[in-house]
Length: 194
Image (cartoon, rainbow, N blue to C red):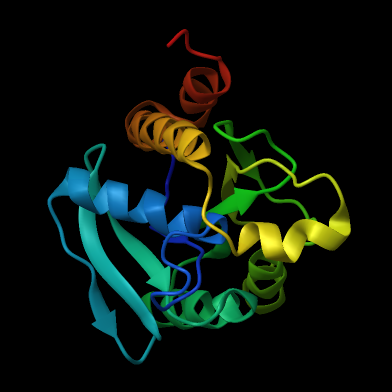
């Protein structure tokens, strides 16, 4: 069975100060998908987001970048879901993940926020039943260093690993939309020999 995903929402922070920071990994994934689909995201003031309708894996869906700051991402998600009458289960949220090594990506359904402010906001506004694409950025080693870490750009080596994981993730999402969740997980979670 193919996955019924109506929107892929990438979490990030707006503005030039944040563009290349680790916290914006979800936005990078949405940008990659938009490029693959040959669409451009445009501002929707009502939803406080950039969005585009795209066809991926033979399915039409929304690509979304909330323009709220990370800790208010759920507001844009709620506006989108309410306007287009999208059930929470049809949303997939792409976000940076401290608990995965840089360059690792994992798909997951439901769950908690794990301290991630964007997920906390999404759960507060939409419930927890959305799918997640977790893009590993690694951990700085101590929780007191997390804020500074996520708001800084990755090193050049980390950027290469992140770009590879975003490419693999974009491919896996195409597989998910064509051939189902289990096939996508199998492809994404099996470490490829690069």
